[in-house]
Amino acid sequence: MNCKISYFKTTGKIVSGVGAIKTLPDEIRLLGGNRVFILTDEGIVGAGICDQVLQLLEGNVASVSVYGKVPPEPPLETIDECLSLAQEAGCDLIIGLGGGSAMDVAKVVSVLLTSEKPLSQLIGINLVEKAGVPKILIPTSAGTGSEVTPIVILTDQQENLKKGVVSDFLFPETAILDPELTLSLPPGATAASGIDALIHAVEAYTSVNATPMTDHLAVRAIELVVANIRSAWANGYNIEARMNMLEGSLLAGQAFANAGVTAVHAFAYPLGGEFHVPHGVSNAVMLCAVLRFNMIANLQKFAALGKLLCPDISSTDVKVLAEAGIRLLEELIIDLKLPRTLRELHVPKDAIPRMAEGVMKVTRLLANNPRRLTLADAKCIYQEVY
Ligand SMILES: [Fe+2]
Image (cartoon, rainbow, N blue to C red; front, side):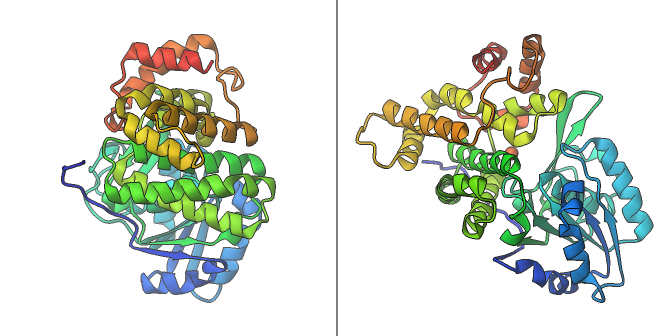
């Protein structure tokens, strides 16, 4: 039983359902926005989703500016560029439209607009001193859960490291979840972002900071993602699967925003930072090896996860149940044609020692991990998945 004092925090308002995007002008009005700055990426612009949003805003606000080039794994330099443009536009409301990168950049630009301190002094935990300009986040993939997390992950290209800004001021005022915006997401991105959502839920569930409330959210997220990810991957236009994936990603985000993610994400960060492996892909590669390492630390919880993933299994042996759950996750990764080794990602073997050192620096996440981890363990785990 977890007897520690716990807190539960989430996004103020969540608007969700088919056609939910049509509420955007009303939500902007409710937040007092009139000069809107949209942060999005080239894929969203190319898919016509940004134009769709611009049409909705026509005649409803005084001005709209768009930055349409947020890159994946956004570097610190992108934030400086976006901040200057947002200041020039005199914006009073920020919209993050896209995957985790566009939403993360929107979150951090929002707080920088009112901050007396530069970005370099906000990197870390609870260093943001006041609320930013209001922000509305609109996910166009189901995975990061960024619309309900107080975290922004950026890439320091000089140090080849992921860096995080963590602050309650990063929660958006409003999130809008509309599955129609996710229909055109290609299968590869659907698999990578969907598996990221599943990993958020699994890691929150097995985190040392899990609470009954985060467990409840994580369990439902796991059920939704496992039941729908194959359908969404196989036919992106399956609106029901897309809605369930958005819901699963949201619940997983709420769970990990409060319980934290663990070592799978810590192992994924060096792969993203140095080798630019997409976030969901790097997590998928590391998932099962890290879970096998971790399960001994809390066999009861990993057995409960196994029972959830394999409800028909008759064994009551906790190790058998825990292993069955991990095997089911492996099958899922195979079905979705996600890579399973570092070799497939063209990561050189001699990078393992420095990547292992990188893992050990992600103390924010290792603190949530059920099993203590040494540098030697980290090297072994990378070698296992080579
Ligand atoms: Fe993630």
